[in-house]
Picture 1 (cartoon, rainbow, N blue to C red):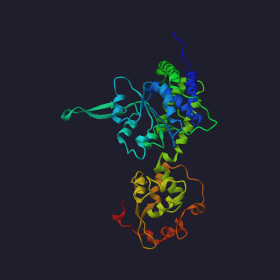
Picture 2: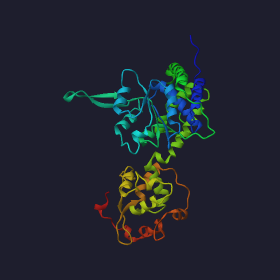
Picture 3: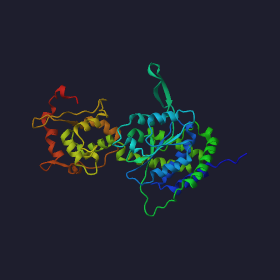
Picture 4: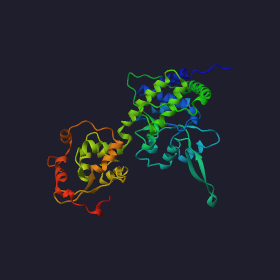
Length: 412
């Protein structure tokens, strides 16, 4: 009879193994990665599996090394670089057992020059859930039939830049950075250190077998404010931490709160939400309607904002309309540009604050406390030294506003 495995001590050893070779940006990242390694051995106990994404703005930040260490610790690792969706879902649904997919250089798949890769994106999204399947036609000619391929599997990714929103929201995100001169790691020698990782992997597998009945069906209480998709991401990791015991439960909960908050503050996580926030806090600032041209002038004048370079070009009226059309008004209709009657008698198209109000309330954090005077003063200049707010004063207060707008021009 073998001695029982101390789960907390084992996770401590896994974390220490990572620390020998990886420099992660925060303590929370070490906790999350260690729990992710362990959760891969208990995948069938959960309804969903979080992806883990090692991302950085520049090469040489330790992303690939992080995947190398993960590879030694997870069950049946499958290193994928530029793998097709077809290859991946056949590997996951094969008879040799479900792999843990390690996707390096993921930016070559979803980067700006790689196209949309919707098939692979669909596979990664579907495989987040245990019920996820990918359907394909199998057979030749007229003898084809639709066959479901299970897609549920653990996936770790590394790459430059960011990822599509649908994948980011299903991921624990570790923002890697280059090591500082005073940050030291042990050189990783595969022939030597791989065996140490494999020994830890074997112990993780044996420990997982001893706690499987405890973890299966467990629903850990989430920290305050962690709901919906973030809860789906972190429930398996918290369940592993609670099964391990010791300090891991409290450390996991603290890491959950920290990393979820960091992800929500990431400007690149949702261009649409960034747009809503900038429209509310910098562009409209109490004005009830604005022409599209004035909105774009204001957005592209903002410092440290993405609007001057969207795919290499400034944001256009078409791009603005596309981003806003994914949100709806309080009447549950897509936000679209409408005619705005001005004091000069012209009728440019633009947007109304009342149409944006519901999206602002649902998707944006509380606005910063600014007086109307300071907000107007911060509005960029657009013509003749006048601010957008000053230029639009005639729009807001002219009696011509109340004139019934032509019905035919009310659509985008």
